[in-house]
Image (cartoon, rainbow, N blue to C red; front, side):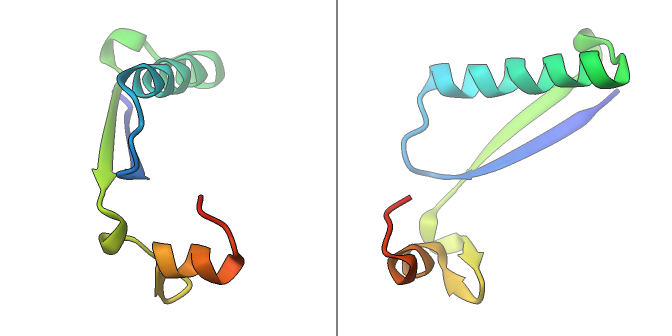
Length: 70
């Protein structure tokens, strides 16, 4: 019974995008590990930007240092 937890920053992922992630991860587990999709759980957590850090910086500051938005 696989359980996959995907964490993304809260930046407006659409329900369709989330459904595609769930389907894709489930398909990957079926294909690679021969898991039963009926007992495969995929959970998507959206995390506020200020609650996510990379390299010792909040993600917004990290991205700014790299000169990019996403």
